[in-house]
Image 1 (cartoon, rainbow, N blue to C red):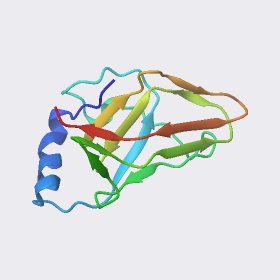
Image 2: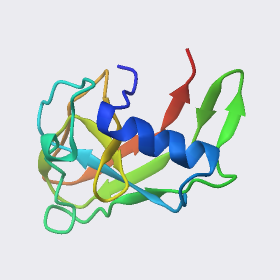
Image 3: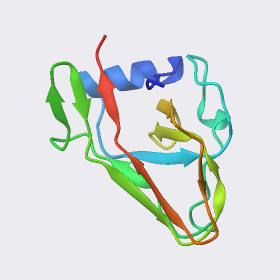
Length: 131
């Protein structure tokens, strides 16, 4: 599934893009509920995977600097790997927030991912595509 920018995040994203707001780092968190991704989503719609208590991974951060690669209308961020040492709930996708607002979210098209008792990894490569 393609990522979606909810209505609540559109102005914040635009302000960041055109320099009307400080950019700073954004949190990228995995979520464990089977939420329907649409324009009405808010941060509370996503049940964040509690990485500090479930197997050892930590949330990642997406920087809004020169780390992105842009080719033919696609902006991609380097792949992020979440490593778990134990079982966690099914992981349906990821959400990017500024700490208060869901800026964009994506459900894994081949998910959900289930991490077994022995641990495992989830890899995320955020890509923004202009249409």
